[in-house]
Amino acid sequence: MTEPAPSAVRIDLPDGRKVTHRDVAANGARFHIAEAGDGPLVLLLHGFPQFWWTWRHQLAALADAGYRAVAMDLRGVGGSDRTPRGYDPANLALDVTGVIRSLGEPDAALVGHDLGGYLAWTAAAMRPKLVRRLAVVSMPHPRRWRAAMLRDARQTAASSYIWGFQRPWLPERQLVADEGALVGRLIRDWSGPRPPEDETVETYRRAMCIPSTAHCSIEPYRWLVRSLARPDGVQFYRRMKRPVRVPTLHLHGSLDPVTRTRSAAGSGEYVEAPYRWRLFDGLGHFPHEEDPAVFSSELISWLKDPEPDR
Image 1 (tube, rainbow, N blue to C red):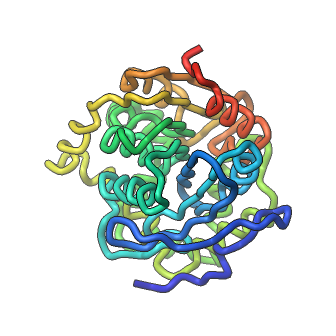
Image 2: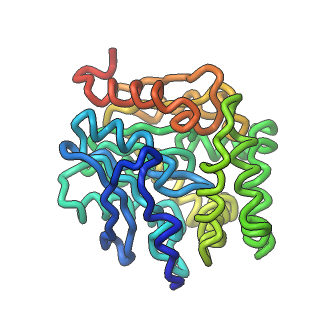
């Protein structure tokens, strides 16, 4: 395993507010977490091409609202272990539920964006007793994702980067070339009309250039595509028929160019519990970063709502 550079990912929040950085063991690996606040656990899962820092605004907002907010780096990213194997969604979801146990909590509200959202859906189906509530951002249910990728030509085109990841070695080299310039282009292209600041983009570029991160970031997407017709993939998607039985909040940007609204909408058919769909007008693939105040308000109001089906 390659040891990550701590200075690139063990950073404070933009306003200088401190978060607690530490490592926890789960599912045979070591995971870096950033933590703020006390109260019921809210575990935040990042997507591609990011790391825990994507939740910097929500960590502060959730802590102020009375929650124990924890953002973890997924396997192979940020300050977490880069292992040679284990990047299929079932194992990555066990990483997530293992971190909940390692934090000494009986359960957590899971909040996941992009790939983190895919894993949040998976964890809620596989380990329902450990998931108190579920909030998913910019990602359909795994079975909806599979159907859209196979049957919707527009979604297939929007996900062209995923198909490009199937090539050996070249995608990794492209991600780290010119000090991670491609990472910056992807984040800007996938955002709505409120582009990220240059300093934000630089933070993500530096994190991607930590040795082995690019390869590990791509591996989950390679599994998702290559397993579509393989027995292990068929078995996984069959397991995902199991309904989610916790209150679920589904958040999406109306201008998301990566995951079409049509692909995400309808995921509620896999939820046998209160399900709330919220479309953010004028936002792209990163609503939690593009308009953090509105996003955090929506999330916290839902977390505090004792009757979320209203």
